[in-house]
Amino acid sequence: MTLIADILLVAGALGAGFYCYVLSKRLRRFTDLEQGVGGAVAVLSAQVDDLTQTLLRAQTTAQGSVDKLADVSKRAETAAQRLELLVASMHDLPDTGPSEPFAAPVFARSSSAPKGVQ
Image (tube, rainbow, N blue to C red):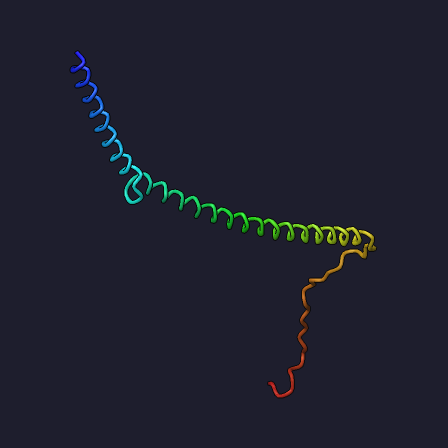
């Protein structure tokens, strides 16, 4: 009976050894940096670094645009306030009545012809 138990114990140990060998081969192939998931992880890690740098540049550019837009908006508000002040001061001017700035020109013909023309 002990002989059968020893044979089964050796067979189990050999089976476990073979299983570990196959598992180590698969794991080595899985983590291979050239073709396996390790390579994919390395590539993804590099892409994440590139995207992080691109995101930082985009944020810097956006912040510059926000600063420029704030400056332009501030100048526009200042100009609008000056224009409102000018329009308000125009209400204080006296009303001179309607004028005709675009009156049609008047042409008059003379009855005599110019010298040298007949």
